[in-house]
Amino acid sequence: MAADPSARRADAPSSRFRPHARREPWILTYHSVTDAGDDPYGITVSPARLDEQLSWLRSRRLTGVGVAELLRARAAGRRGLVGLTFDDGYADFLGEALPVLRRHGCRATVFVLPGRPGGVNEWDPLGPRKPLLTREDVRRVAAAGMEVGSHGLYHRDLTALGDEELHHETRHSRQLIGDLTGTPPEGFCYPYGVLDGRVAAAARSAGYGYACALSPGPLLSRYALPRTHISQADRGARLWAKDLRHGLRHGAVPGTAPACAPRAAGPVRTGGAR
Ligand SMILES: [Zn+2]
Image (cartoon, rainbow, N blue to C red; front, side, top):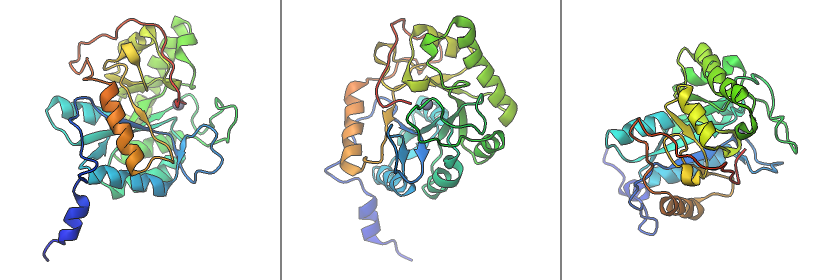
């Protein structure tokens, strides 16, 4: 059967929203995927909106993948990929996000909290309480072909911890996830997007290959990757603006070569991070 020419046109990037030259990896940050009702922290996107957002990416010839895959592909010179990350390890990932990702041929990184298996998001004082993945759920996420990364053990501000607790959060969470999935995770994600040079160095020395922040400022490196928070309000034009802003704000990320150390700087705290 001949291809439908209108379908080709629908897939082509709109001339209004032509992709800019992309030097930096673009990584999107999601949290919970379910009906977005009571959502004081803006961490919930409905499955229908996620579907719409992934369709928008596809219209711009971008495919969502996990961050480890994104970094490897870029090192090999491959373009056309965008990182998809889901922080906190909400239980709704399996039932709500995964089917949408599969429908679009996307993969993602899920940053889980192995100190709170089957728990809830107690760190968000306003709630609502959302269940987290159980140990068996984390295995199912990995078995579904998704990358599982560490968000630390308990969702604590790592810059406020002493060295011993900091190393416990980074190293022990890596060990627990490795025990669950059979593979030590490559990726770490700082709770609240908060880090400083000491915290980034701890993630590196714990054996991770990369770590995600939000807006890491002068700490920008492979161990402080910038990401873009995505909300229920983000549709075509807003997504395009966020993509453009990300491209203007962040240059090429130093440290795509494995031997880059995080730069020393004070703590970095950014909005929109949980
Ligand atoms: Zn978080």
